[in-house]
Length: 568
View 1 (tube, rainbow, N blue to C red):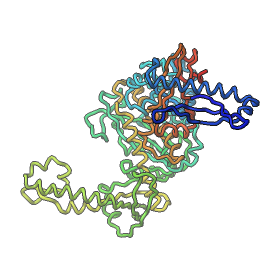
View 2 (cartoon, rainbow, N blue to C red; view 1 turned 90 degrees about the vertical axis):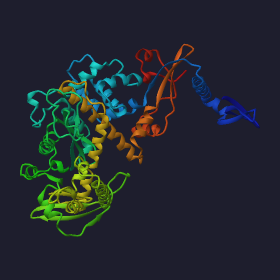
View 3 (cartoon, rainbow, N blue to C red; view 1 turned 120 degrees about the vertical axis):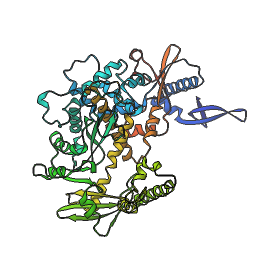
View 4 (cartoon, one colour; view 1 turned 180 degrees about the vertical axis):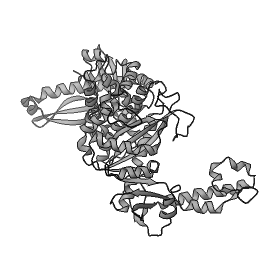
């Protein structure tokens, strides 16, 4: 590629031309005509164009030589993750809040950088803090090169550190107030304009088990949603707003029961975030008559939409589901394939208690088909002898041995089970239309999705942490990672992008800066932005680094790609 002047009549034009081979013969192709040569000379643009062309030519030569393996590679680092999430870390207030809380604390390392590194690692390679320490060597993350593993452990301990006694007034009965609570409150205050319409919140819990003992107090045996009652665990609660933005998370001992958690969380929302009137949405594991009474008492007066236990609550089973009435069809907005499917609702009052019965006919057909498959297999198994059935819980629910010498299929149990096909029942004290009640409850899938993300971010359990403080910090870093994830997903959705999360982080992870050396100078060569990467940078408002940059001596000393400059 080179400059060429082309004369047409009495005028000369400056062109950029490239040589290429066509059918075994050299041919020239004009890439661009830059303008009349005399005009470029008179305006002073010619020198600038020639200098720019020289830089472009050098860049092309460097890229070509690198592609052919002709340049020694000094190092290669991935740059996409930190460039995107550092900007979001700042804009969500995470960095500012953490730095404020660290003011006056004299650590010998940068605690804020250690926390950012850990949260970033959770987004791209979920695992332990030990894994994060190894992972960082392949990435360009500003301010993190000097961090060591024990720094990460100390940063986790600071996040889970108990606050002084005079700051414990808003604690729950299950756990003390910690540094992480103040971070949540600071982030909420920083983004308060996003939460001005905080009229609806979703709450749910899950359990996370440990391979070891799980600290001094937080690791306890309890009801395991991972089906591992043999292991110590902790309970994690999450509160999200109506748009799916994480507000806070609660970290409790593993023997904390769901039914005892809702009221402390509701009270803390008011005292911590200044929420006055709100509707809480939670599933059936949170409901008890004591919980409902507490929510409705004068001191709170909160509205609620709560799932009801259909099979174990007599009022629901014997009265609500037995009431006749016409269902009304509701068509929820379906943005994605896994969003709620069409459903039907009807309203039932039992004295002054309002219930909404919901029916999803797709789920009803699936429930019926699953049951028919079990019963068909059961009939076949009955011919093989009773003992093969006793150990199968799915089979036992449809068996009876009453008034017979052996097992038989219980048709009454099958008919009773069919009453619940595709249904769920809600209890509410709101004045919302029954269809709106059902739609709001269906949004609990956001919390369930949040927990699925949380589980994946904790694929490697905090087995190297021995103290409650570091365990709390380890889990809270996953909360911070999900704040960043939700922020990015929200910005992509605003632009109409509905990509799989794995594609987004995969494309970011492939963006690299390769440091090469030529003629005693060092250069950074940026790889091509693949797939979704370029549009992710646009959505966040971050410019892609130049394709070729010369590394300054200062940058060489710091090892920082961001200090590089375009080639001479």
